[in-house]
Length: 91
Image (cartoon, rainbow, N blue to C red):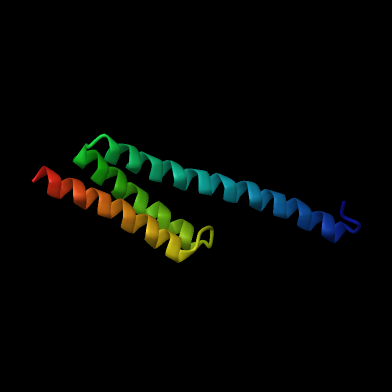
């Protein structure tokens, strides 16, 4: 428990920020999951579309410091690799 008004306010702010960050992280994971699901269903157009909508969200989370920039790059790279693999298999 906070002993000062200042510490109590910081605790309130920290909880508010934690909940916001959890919401943003969940949103990002939802977009990633939508892309993975489209890839798993072997629907190239849906996968490309889902990837195009997921990339800006992933980048935004990295720029805000919610995830590390290398983690964002890793997610995008792996998703894109799966999509390219699907495209070459379809051709």
